[in-house]
Image 1 (spheres, rainbow over the protein chains, first blue to last red):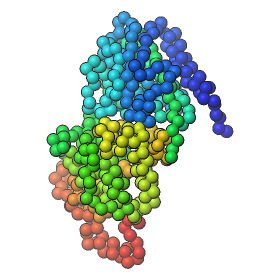
Image 2: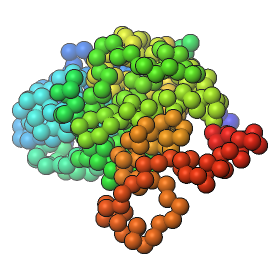
Image 3: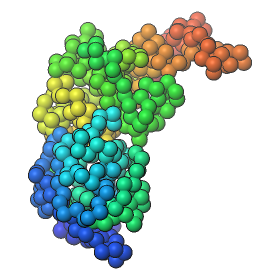
Image 4: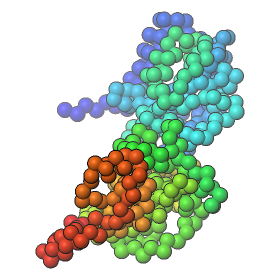
Length: 195
Length: 243
C-alpha cells in the first residue's frame, strides 16, 4: 500500500534529520555556530529558479561570518534530507576552501578545467549525488516542497584532500576536525506542469 | 573559430574524452557514465546561429536536424586531435535509420527535440544554438541527469531517456559501419584505432594490432564481395540490413 505523508510531515522529517545528526555530533564536541547567509537566498524562503534546472542552474552565492578562532579550512555541503535512497541526496560538495574566504560567489565552474576564483583558489568540488564534480540544483517532484541544507563547516586543519570525494568521504575526512558549523536552509518547489 | 579548435581539450577527470575513446574503445566511453556524456569542449558550431547544414534530411525537418547536429557536436566534438560526430555524419545515420531500423524512435525524436528546445527557452531564455557555451553545457547536463524532466515547459517523459537515446545513436553513427550512413570516411574507426572488418586474423596480425602497427582496412563490411552477395540475397527475400 502506498503511504502518502502530507508535505508538512515530510518537511518536519527533513528538518529533524540533520538536527538529529547535529545532536549526535554536538554530543561529541561543543560546536561553534557559524552564521551562513546569502545575498540571494534566506532560510525558509523559496530559492531563485536560477539555482535550479528550471533556470540556469548556477551555484548560489553564500557568505559566512563568525568563524571560530583557529579555522584553517572551510567546506560546504548542500544536501536534501527529504530525498535520496538512503537520504540525503547531495547537490553540491566543495572543500579545501581557504580560511580567509568569506563566502562563495555565484556560478562556480561546471567545467573541470576551469579555475576557481582567486579568493577560493585551491577549493575542490567533490562528487554530488549524480557523481558530478559541480553544483546541480533542486529538481524535486512537482508540487512537493523540499528543503536544501547548505552547511558550512569550519575545520581546524588544512586537510589536503584530493578530488572526487563524496559527502561520505568528506564527512569521514573531517571527523574530529569540525570546530564550527552553520546552515542556510532555503526551500524549493516545482510548479511547472509538462505541456 | 579555428583558433579555439587548437585549444579544445575535453578534460573530465585527468583524461580527455578523446584519450578515453582511444585508450579504451567506444564501449568504455559508453560505460563511462560517471564522467557524464556531455563534452566541455567548445564544439565546431558554437556561433549564435548554427552554420546551415548542407545535409538534406529524409525524416527530420531541417530545424530538427540542425538541432540534433548541435547536440551531437557537444557529445563528440571535433578538436585538434581528431574529428567528431559532425565529421562522421552521425546525424545523417540517425536520419536514415529513422526510416528503417529506428523508425520506432521517430516520434521520440520529434517530441524530444521539441521539448529540449522548449526547455532551453524556459530555463535559459533562448534556443539551444543561441545560448552561451556554458549554458548549453548546463542545459545538456540537466537533460542527461533527468533534472529537465517535469520542468515547466520541458519534457513530458524522462529527459534522461531522451538523452540516452540520442547519445546511443550518435555513438552508433560515429563508430558504426559506414554502410549505414555514418562514420564518414571511417573517421570513427580511425579515432579509436579500429583496424576494420577482417575475415581472418593471424597471430602476426594480432601482435601487430597490439603494437599499433596493423594497417587498418578502411572498408565497410558490405564492401566485401561475400557480404555483398549476402546483401543481395537478403534483399531479394525482402529483407533489409537495417531491419
